[in-house]
Length: 397
Image 1 (tube, rainbow, N blue to C red):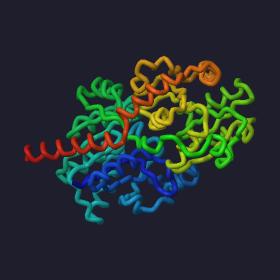
Image 2 (image 1 turned 180 degrees about the vertical axis):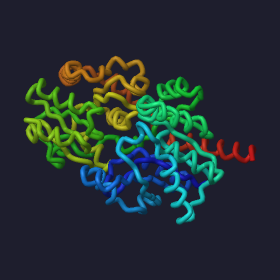
Image 3 (image 1 turned 60 degrees about the horizontal axis):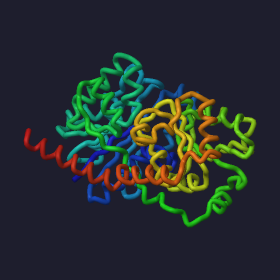
Image 4 (image 1 turned 90 degrees about the vertical axis):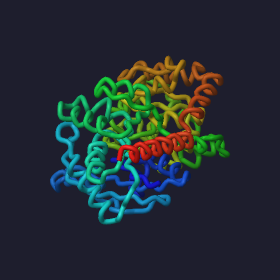
């Protein structure tokens, strides 16, 4: 079976942490004997915007084609404007870049798997129409919870992608419910697959890990892993540090537009640390070296790093957004409200000094992620979905 994987984010040597959950799933499918080709179109902004924004220039440094862990990845450019998903969808331009790449490199898949309704879903719809291929759409979070509300055209684009896919999958129940409200179409829940085997016990002690990672050994460390943006709650976490005891430090693992503001914090390099973006394989070392994971996001789908932290039995402080409450189940009271520095400060104290995460709580949350979010389970269920789609497509032809 040959699958064309269409996504707007995928790791590269330049951006190793970008869309790592895609790579994890692709590698699991590869182990099942499924041949996956990834096309990750890159928005190419007009020269004026590339001059203004470093992030727009860095996109051009990623190769058009590269092999990553045995998988061919293509990054064809398409003309884009900043913020375009809010108003005018670039579906046709992205689809044209994908179709050209397929033609130039002889890519002939059996089906298409698109991730995020916008922009990948909109482009996949056009590609599927022109190649007569069946396609499956996975909804991840922002494509359901954020973009459809920006404008009537954005909502229409979302609905069109959902309604035309042969199969629609959602990474959590909340996304399934919201999609039904917006489109009237049912979807199936298939959580993100995470390679939980990498989050067993580490052979190194916490002290040795901190020494190797050049982290303070005499601090209680709160770790944040993700893109450094306002919507991830990074400013609230930095503000919380000012109200916490001096023995507590915050470690930000990742990169993004909020990095420059965070670097201006008075406690930088004393109690506030920034690693920049790191390879996914190294994230677990930072998790094991820390005492708490904090993810005070304004919105989420089903955050991979929370699943990884629970698999590593690292206490988690997270907002009750997206699919996170269903992940925590009967322990959802551990979650906090978004945009509240006061609540974040109190929950950090509860976890570090109040034994909020008992051994029983940690064990039950660990069992939950092992049972429902392991990448091997995810890949096997995806294979079933693929076969179902192909069989249905043969019948209808």
